[in-house]
Amino acid sequence: MQNRTKMASLPQADKETQPSSNSDVNASTAFDTEDDSNPLPSASLEILDRPPSQDVIFDPQAASLLMHYFDQVFEWQFPYFRSTSRLGNRGWLLYLLMKRGPLYHAVLSLSSLHQSAILGSEEEYQQKERALEYHSRALREFCRFMGEEPGKLLDDNARLAEFLACSLILISCEVFRGAEHDWLLHLDAVISVMHSLSPKTIFDARYTSQTVSPVPSQDRPQMGLEFLLATMVSLDLFACLSTGRVPQLPYQQWLYTPEIHIADLLGCENWVMIIIGDLACFGEWKEVQEKEGILSIGELARRGAEIKDRLTTGIEKLDLTKDKEENHESQTGWVTLLFALACLVLLHTIISGPLPALPEIRSAVSRSIIALQNRPKAYSLTGLVWALCVLGCMAQPHNQLLFENLVADVVRDSARFGNCGTVLKIMRNCWKMQETGHADCRITMSRMGICAILI
Image 1: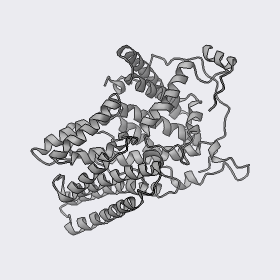
Image 2: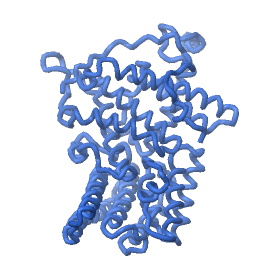
Image 3: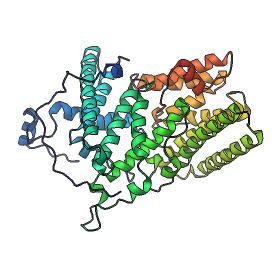
Image 4: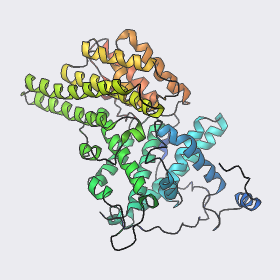
């Protein structure tokens, strides 16, 4: 695919500075209550007091919300993001926001929601009302955006990046309030588009054309596409645990691509992310074999051993290198280790069943507890939702309080936004179910009637 996008002049700000309250989209269900030191020239300061015109792109309120997003909300979405990595420059995101399309309104909505969680009761109510209005506007603009020349989405990297970015923000809006249901619609829409893409078509498009002067990729949405595609592949993998389905995208093809570094965004190395997808496929294979009455214990053991060997080898390499790494790399090693240990627990749950007392499961959970107890204070837990849920649900009774307190602390520190509260509910229900039978996080979510994406 050749990127035929040309850098257009920045759109003029329209006259509408507040989102419309008249919405033909019912969004209420999505928002239930639950260094430059030189001073700015005076002329620049005066702009802030003028209504939006051709001289400004964002009105003061929108500018404040956008800065809140970049400063605080983005960190909540990507707590292990490496600003020093190749994808660390978020200029592509600012460029898309300056278009004031559906992404712009979705980000304003998410930022308003985030502010509502840290404000007083009266301000919280006003901010949630504002977030609902922005969300309604975002949905309308998104529908209009998708209806305009839909065939060009795959041929225009800027439009594709806006589609992916807006979908990510809409998913984050659902995660903000617990992500128990409505996120899957947005993810499936992304997956349907990504089925028409491949790493080759995306990452080989380094220049707009061989017949014109090359345009460096940092001047186009290329970096944004790499960021967004890596994130969406990861969401597809994390979704497997709650949906019970296999990855819908060719995850190995994407994750073996040199340009994709999940650790730069989510803190977990690619090899563990690949194993998460392999475990989903392994679990489905076992279920099909059992239903058809043809499950071979020997083949089950062989497939399980192959995944276990990869996990064991990877964990050993992490142990060998952890003392030689710099700070941000040691954080990656720590995050990767916890995801790998969660994968070990999931692997033995698939092979033998959800048995917390099983030696292999008990050993992996115990090692994760050591890693969690030795966590440097600077390392956030908010990016470990998937791993904490898998590990916590398989903790034995004498270790359950530790996981409960860890997750409860995250819920308290985050002003109750995000889906750590959902994880806490899943773990508590799982432990209760284990008193009379067998249960893991997937079985528990099914019994609870929820489908939560654990991110």
